[in-house]
Image 1 (cartoon, helix red, strand yellow):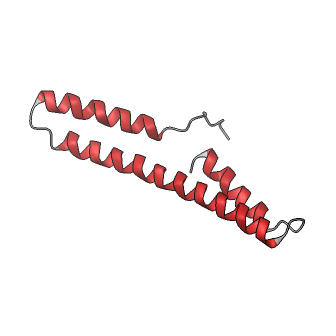
Image 2 (cartoon, one colour):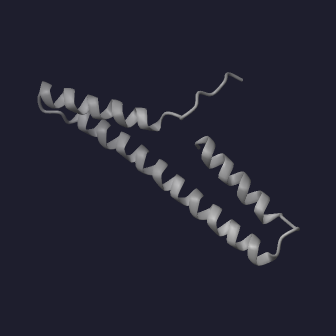
Length: 90
């Protein structure tokens, strides 16, 4: 999961347990955070699917030119899956 996804999960927990606001305000905030989380997960799923599609294209390349293009697409798809900020070693 991306750092943004983790932040949205945290927001969902905070909003769901907020006792200072009315139930309707909490529901509205949780619904918004849920929609953002869903969209982020859907986008992540789409990026991973592109990696698989590009890998299949590499494996099925019929000539060298096709292979070079497929490898270029695979590199781009993999780069799109990299985290936006580098993680520090634990």
